[in-house]
Image 1 (spheres, helix red, strand yellow):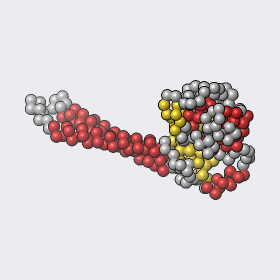
Image 2 (cartoon, helix red, strand yellow):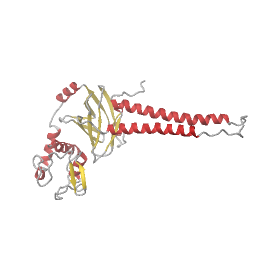
Image 3 (cartoon, helix red, strand yellow):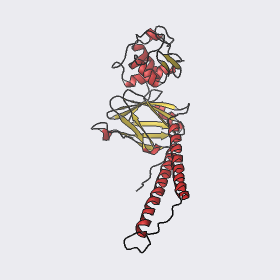
Image 4 (spheres, one colour):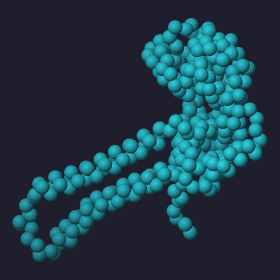
Amino acid sequence: MNFTLPQATVDAREVDALILALTLASLAVLALVFGLMARYMVKYRAGSPIDRGKPPQKTWRLEISWTVATLAAFFGLFIWGADLYVRLFQPPANALQIYVVGKQWMWKVEHPGGQREINTLHIPIRQPVQLVMTSEDVIHDFSVPAFRIKHDVLPGRYETLWFTVEMAGVYHLFCTQLCGEGHASMIGQVVAMEPEEYERWLGGGAKGETFVEAGADVFRRHGCAGCHGDQGAGGIGPALAGLYGAQVKLTDGIVKADEAYLRDCIMTPQKRRVAGYPEIMPSFAGQIDEEHLLKLIAYIKSLK
């Protein structure tokens, strides 16, 4: 029986190394504490002939040395872990974005080219992949043990996760948040493929509109062009072309236009009021579901 998990990503090896270092450091401290306890239990046991009238003299050098050494070791582990955590949430600019929606009890995946799949995620190896995730109902948790990744997927919010897989193969995908009576069935697989094989898979599956094309359709059907122009050039409402990633001046500050900001503008427009424009933007909450909202935001992001 194999008790080890595959290390399919670079980060998986580093996460394992960090956990091993933390475990060894903790064991060293435990061994020191319990070793001293055992030594003195034996030394001063009942009936021991040792002279208890002459306690050994303290040496502050020893106290300071092991205290500083322990502090330095664990502070070093903290710095290592914090650095790894920050890198895990900073995807490279060339990451392939794939959209994931959690729903009781399935993972719905859509690729930028419009390819869809349920409870399966096809990805290329040696290519950074960024998942943009949200939930249609309750809190889920996207977890792939072989990648050492795990992230909550929340309704009404966008969460991102990125990784680079090095080894082709099929890896288990789980929901690790108890999300209802069918939680145990919310499992799937990640199929990591050579880039050429992944391109063939993209071309061979059922393909409809691309994500951006579908978003443009949502844009038109909900009449967004009436205020923002056919190509998001602006008008009654602020311009959408070039909006994504820009700094937006609000009535109460400045915010970066990321996915969360765009979502708020569509679903809860009164939450962040853009300076210089009338407060006439209606809320589309209840009119656009999460899948279509992801497509609409992808379209807005594509406007240059």
